[in-house]
Image (tube, rainbow over all chains, first blue to last red; front, side):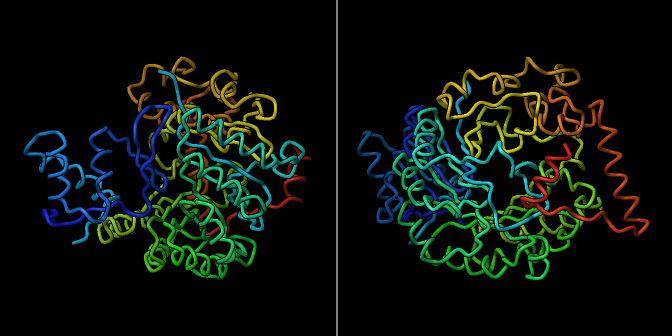
Length: 92
Length: 374
């Protein structure tokens, strides 16, 4: 798999579902026979993966929201990790 | 740290049209202990209480869960609660309409068993003509947009088909294939000497799995459940006793796994008499092997105790008569010679071309006869 370019549009695989875990007070990604625990940033990134926004859009949104810069590497590596598990897909 | 469950296996009924001789259900499934199934309302309460305890993943299993006419209601309740639901089914006589209704109710994932790659062998192992229904149901599952797991229990009569089974799952567009080497509990323990493969069979199948994993990458996840009699160390069974998993039986008993009811030295409580929370946190059976304080040597001082949690209590009970013994498949366990003898007997018989013993198929009359003998 090639690394995604900033124009790529990430989206959650339809088999996966974002869910709030009320008992442990955190967000999780649920999929067949599996659970990924998310930190608040991870959950926020996935919340922006709507199948419309590109990687560049998502990074820009987060940088604006937190008045930060240089977030591209963190966002990309987080999504690459989930893509390696088959939980995130890229469209173009 | 307090154990909070993540997984609930709801065994909705022990009735099943298939008769697989390795079934993990109790040998006495047809007896009085399991006869009075929980009602729709009782199951919905179990799901609510499980969610409040921390459960996120729900397996709807059996027996054959499709035999419950209220399955759609149970799925809808699970979805309202935010549980990720998996239907674990034989797909016998499953129609596209029923599957579509389950999709509308919010079912997330479908797992359908197959007994072999071809109809003749698959039907022979299932004891019921069912392969055709399974192939149709695989198609419906994909057409309706469900993620699909193909599940196969492996043993000496079908291990040679591992490559064909992986190709079948690939062709069907499945997300996962579970190649589950037979774990010897329930009916499988009763039929152990007939089901156990040789080391050569296992090695050949494992070569295929490694090659196919490299070829398929993330396109198809290949899960290989280890044949623990042939391993050096025990499996980390259920991630430890009553830590993350629970099973609720058709009549409402709460077990830490689907095999634990066989441990006759423990008394398991039911959701009819107690809240699930109390059973999980306080009941004697679920506390009995939680953590490490129950461990005997060699587990107690073993570095692997945090990796495998002393292995499987059910296997310890079945093989040694003591649920508190070290899992006998561990090469450090005092009872390992019993496992070695069982493995060696199969190797010897195969080398001498002696036919394996005949299988006892899983069915209500056989269940009652076995229960009467005990």
